[in-house]
Image (cartoon, rainbow, N blue to C red):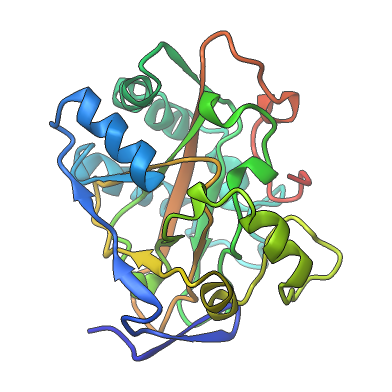
Length: 270
């Protein structure tokens, strides 16, 4: 059951047909041409069961095991936090390097692909008013949009109430959206101009576009364009914490943003 009113970074947005619609789910077994056509049209493709659910859950459990007995942790992803350590572990690297992820990227490039080294790990704690602000990946990583793709992978189930990713409908098709929104949007962090806004209702009203959501399951993968606007809602009072990773690929032979050649840390500035 979904709440009638959601928040994102504390800013309210009604969970209603005016503001939300469901993501289209896609069978990973469809032919490559159909998958590429859906990606071009929608800016994303939600692949249900693209990887084994038990592998996603095992990776989640390996991460959570690093918290056992630890107190007074630094902020998420800073040196000394389990997320900082986990992305440097053999377990995580083996997960991110699974051939299935590269094969997915190559399907959408229709060309050889290589993984981009920097791979963020996110967690959103139930009940806290902390979420991903509306943004586009191209703001954070240099490169031609057609040569970079993100695979968003939930580690375990990630329903809307736990803060799974949501996408602004057809935002990848609007060449003027970024300039217009940046000029007018409210922001809760004046010193950081990279996110478009923390106010998801405002951007939906301003653009007349809905937020697309799904109750993600362990094993799902969302492939999305660097130009589609996405965000998340605050996790509610649920017992299930959203944990996810962003595995990115570039087309072989294309330039690589040098900032993304090192392991992720939450304080690396990008």
